[in-house]
Image (tube, rainbow, N blue to C red; front, side, top):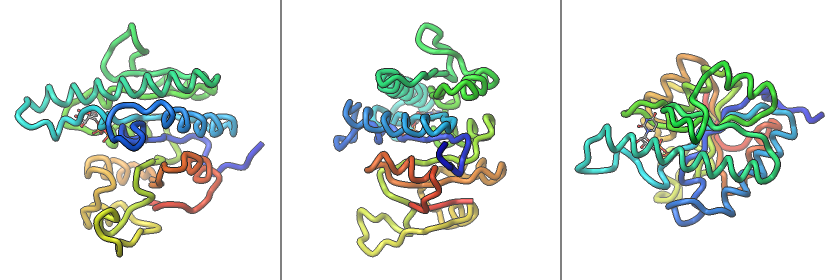
Length: 235
Ligand code: UDP
């Protein structure tokens, strides 16, 4: 048996992480690479729950001119599309999964029931939480914080396009410096865009550590669980 530093993890994947280089929609090869990395985690007997974003299709907060609540429901539906894509990729390579949605759509997935989610995890199934929190005005980062607290996850693995948290945008400023560690209050005070403030506060109040790292190499997920110090650690 491999020595991992976490027993149960909540992996947050942004919608963009599934879109490959295009930033929009779903890139099958990218999803399959992520699924393969998740399978390895699973084989290491780590219990894995996943929250997927929807930004590769739709984000409520940037849909100008539309009623915000309607736009947010559209965003939540986008997360369901992504969750089903990830479920399909995982099942294709022999990993048992369940998708649970925060908005009921029983023909497609189970409704979110915490106790049932815990049972699935204990049985070695990967649980994908879809449709965010089910409420408008929230994000899937907040969903990740909420579900991590509910299922008593050891950590949130926040897989991003960028490889950690920087003091300024590394895409714009070539001198941007990456933080190795941060406190939640630093993230809030410095206005670092790693997570929205609702999600950060929820993690702070419930003492859920966050490991932020890049997903350009999906095996980073494995390295983090093996205790390798990559990206930024927030606690
Ligand atoms: N959303 C929501 N409530 C939630 C989670 C998500 O209304 O609890 C909507 C919101 O419009 C958001 C969209 O779903 O913009 C997609 O989620 P997010 O932007 O967090 O996705 P990501 O940026 O991680 O891909």
